[in-house]
Length: 218
Length: 218
Image (cartoon, rainbow over all chains, first blue to last red; front, side):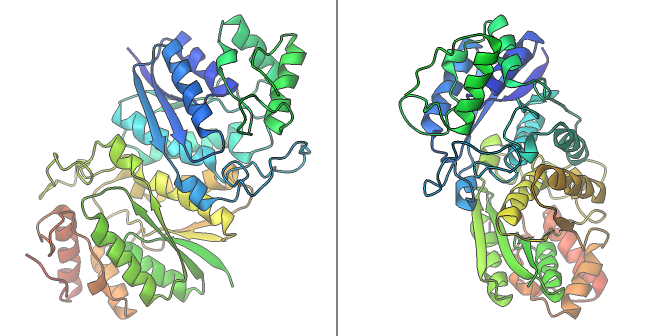
């Protein structure tokens, strides 16, 4: 059976991405990162629920706490305020420098060890927050780097990269993906805040797709 | 003053590389990785000695222990034997999957935060152990990936990539680099073993350059 490392944060995008991998017939190795981000426990819980749903047997939760040691982002630095209304022309302070480069490099190492032929990552280029490490061109370059820097070749799959949030919601619900088990909010409350950039993107996606988001909001 | 992140393992190559960065007029941010490798304490001690020598004020020692969690290499897995005589046609078991990809990605994050215009890495293509992540072409591809995946541009400098070990020894000693403060051996003994692949490369380099290695051997 062909195998793939799926990077699963516990949000909607990476969750749909993992379901697509499953539907393509891959045996999934679930990869999740802890980096002392505000919502670390919630994201980890979502990761495990999604892996349970997908019957993922092999899970790796890796500690990349050095990301918070490097800092310079509002997801790990609680002294920085989570933005509520970033303009689309600027990179918001929730940008974690080169995060997907780090995540893909680690996924490449794990995939090489586990003899996987693919890595799935749920990056979204257009309807994201303008993060440079979510772009198609960047991921393709990392694909090239990984094939040059490892012994074996491997494909990076990014099936969501050119979808917008409403298409993601639509596609996920059509496939029966349990979006109510995912977490998107940047803030660490019992319920999602509904007003941070990430909640706003999520809610806009549901609204445009014509569905109701079943998670609780403050 | 222009700034650079220098990846410094504590071996000869990365040490010479850091001296070259200093000579080029960079203010150095020293970056070192702990990953539960056999010689972790020794390498960290060498890193600090070299940073002292170079008067590096800003040092980051980052925990990338997930590398040993992923495993599949003899540097972190003490159940695997350190090879003493690898042929140059095979990738030895001391190969850590995509290690330089991971290190460069993290260096890219740190360099972006610290507003550095360069990253120095002491990779050596020809006279190394055949690791794919030490090749010129790979590093150039990572350079492209980093420029696409970050907000700002940054140069990766690899001044040693086309030198062999004897040229490295020669160049280092000509510049007064204290090679006696570096550690190369894969084994964790008080003195270097003198017979692992890494010791053999080092000793061959000194011999061919016509110098005596001042570190102690078993």
